[in-house]
Image 1 (tube, rainbow, N blue to C red):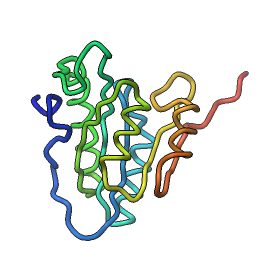
Image 2: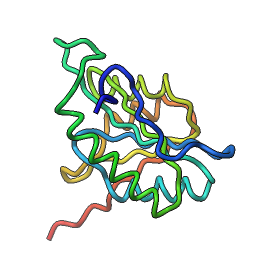
Image 3: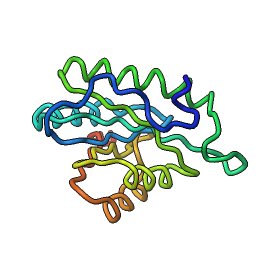
Length: 159
């Protein structure tokens, strides 16, 4: 699990071929939003692109930004594996990444600075599920270049 140490990217499972779009799919330790992941995979397949799942790792202030993060590694590896398995069902190449930051928004900022991409597909949190809060979604919409797709699960009506 050395990929969560000083290097920021995991080895790509499928090398990028062609000139298709690079679609970033950021997620954090709170989990994967399956509906947003499936939407990102459908878009990548339709565009002949590569899915770039980016695990956002929060690094506490008392630690160096490039510190080893064993607990986050234990969370990230199974989620990255799940993304790669699902991508295989869609026949979409994957180029996994890790981005570190002092907060999730800082990691998002680092992601848009360091990664080459055409589109971001982001899960918005709803009803305590995985995804990003309204403030982070608004910040990304105001600051990230390229196309941005925000997907929020349907809210159920109260009985």
